[in-house]
Length: 109
Image (tube, rainbow, N blue to C red; front, side, top):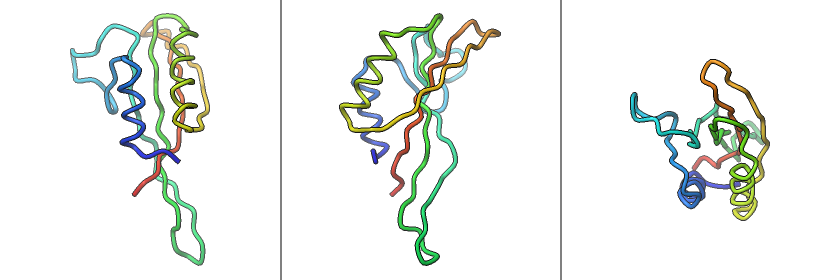
């Protein structure tokens, strides 16, 4: 399972503007851009003790129209980092954006 610092290095390597959770008001770049959004902590237990803890994160890519080439760059980078993911696509009509959300599990230390 990938660690957060490793995931941030993967995002840095893409050359796409990204922010943790969201960009500051008025500082959101033009698409494409990425927001790294944390989910809820999860854990696996044995004998009533946690032995593994992780946080699902969405690598949310925002584009004006579905951008298969940029999605492939992210997929390739995650696969090179041996980071499993799931992908969901959502049209955000009110913002005229497409969100491609790559969900990855990140090890909690």
